[in-house]
Length: 284
Image 1 (spheres, rainbow, N blue to C red):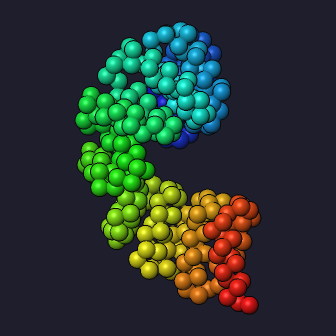
Image 2: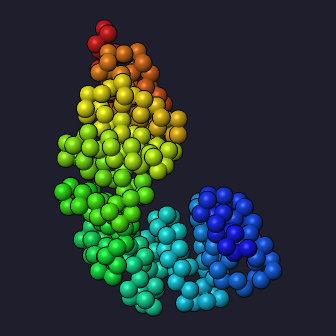
């Protein structure tokens, strides 16, 4: 039943997975893995407080169960309780100093705290232990991207994808870097790879549209933004750039509708305000 629940969790069938773990706990209230796995499901459902109670129950039964410390750290990070998250990862490293997940988790927290030098040290520690950790390469690349160190960032994403090419997030990240390096045509190919792996990855649709916009392919970019908006109708970036593409095609009424939609969702959006005023002044 534990295996069945975990498979359902991996498949995204969270309610059925939860039922499996609850049944185990009815039969055996001291089942450490069932408490941990129940917490993982609740975290995916964004019920972080209840998830934390599950991880604490698992750790009360087995204070050295590292997976619950790691999952607890992730939950605290989602709640932006970063000091508590760091304590969880440090607890893991006290028991297992070479735990790559703990080093990577610390790196993520320091990245959220804008402590970039500390974050890079953590990712490098993870990669010293496991040079083949594709997630750590991706995370390091993502941090370097935010520091505008694009060439270094690109190398990290390429290493990650060489280790595991079935990672849609990394394909998307590689595409984002290529846009910054003015290789928009190569970037489009990366977003296509991401969407082959996950057809519901709306962020990849947005960035593909952004790359096509950079190639002056405005009609194709609009199609991408529309796919993104099917998946997330409140994505103001997709509405904004759909509007910009429509302006380029001189479809001003449709563009105006896009910018008005942005302002409905985000009344203080300065880009949408400026674009709307420009269209209205061009009509007067």
